[in-house]
Length: 291
Image (cartoon, rainbow, N blue to C red; front, side, top):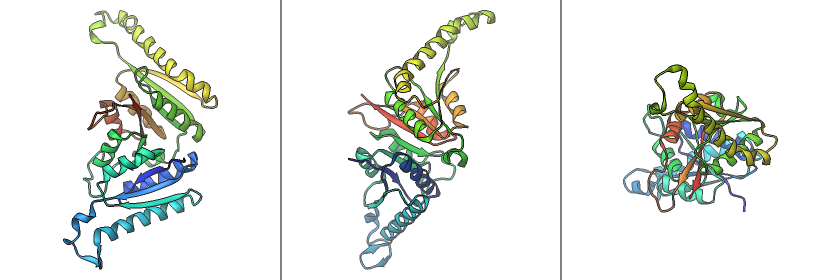
């Protein structure tokens, strides 16, 4: 069964940018594109004027939004197999359910009607936090979203917690024909630093070497499976947040893993992923690692 790439559309400019990005992604992976608009418009039935018998205005607006998004997708690439749906239910619940049989979910970074100053819309955050498939939040500057730089950045976490993200990043880099920058941050605890600056580098060296080892271990097998991908390894002293945000400035896509714990509800994002979704200069892929 060929799982589709599912895009949540809502009529916002951010949502349309997500459609544009998803068209290219569906074409690269040769998967169908499915556009979904979900809203509880039946709440308004009988409270709002209708444009026709039995057709509440919210339903008419929903059909217009999905039709406009479909036309935009077709103009972007008419060869991509396209389907649409309008669902009378909560947006987050609908997208999470769609994600159970999706190659990935794509959303914009801010929804229709949300505050202009908001860094990330509530739908994008909730879906990225809970979906069981990869979620790509399309954000950042136009050159990044258009694939100008030819770089995919991968944030490498702790051992055994990001295999799915590593595999996803390698596939993306291979299909895009660009390079993969794998980044691992490290820090030397302040309590381990000696008083003399000349000895501080020696104290920090084991932490740097451990970061290099974790990076090599994470990349060894997928690098063999994707020999055409040019991989650049970077271990950087400092926080993972700062290292990844800096790398994202000149990247087409930032890929990070997220642990999903069965039986857990609510937000399942760590502080680093949360920061990437709010501040990264390029689209961000959150790839779940189930346990």
